[in-house]
Length: 203
View 1 (cartoon, rainbow, N blue to C red):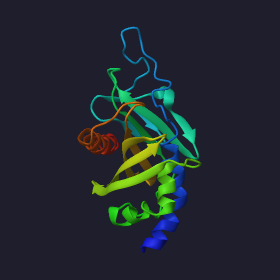
View 2 (cartoon, rainbow, N blue to C red):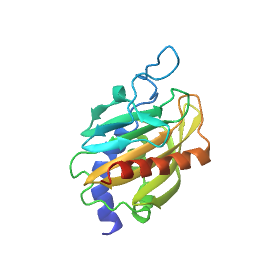
View 3 (cartoon, rainbow, N blue to C red):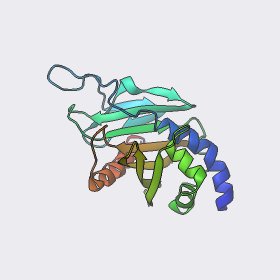
């Protein structure tokens, strides 16, 4: 599949799914805490878009954040303990949303450095500056390291794109508002997130 054909196939689907993964500027919204500080709405796994969702060790899906957006299903994850930490998110596209896509860094790397690709990463209607620092293959997924500059603040985040049962899955690791995630931790979490999703759906 040539690069230009891949772009034509990728763009409509990726814009929808990636934009859905960006809709919670503060993913802690809707995360309730009990009197001892532990989050009260936690599950270790959650069914999302026909797939079984599981986070890396120590992270739980937050059922209260689950919603359907632009034909995709979205859910956020947070530390199961209720402690502060990174916020994770998973967006699962509809049936056959990954049909015809080539999920490899050699295709997606150049695409996400085009204006179309940056729009997909930025989210519809947003004007933030997005920089793509790294695009790498990992166990059938493509992982991106990004910097978003919004209101003069630089925010590091990581995305993984993968397909499972014909559905396009986007995973995100980002800091809570006003916090940061060290690069080493971000890379570790996004790869462990990929591992967790693949492992939960391997049976």
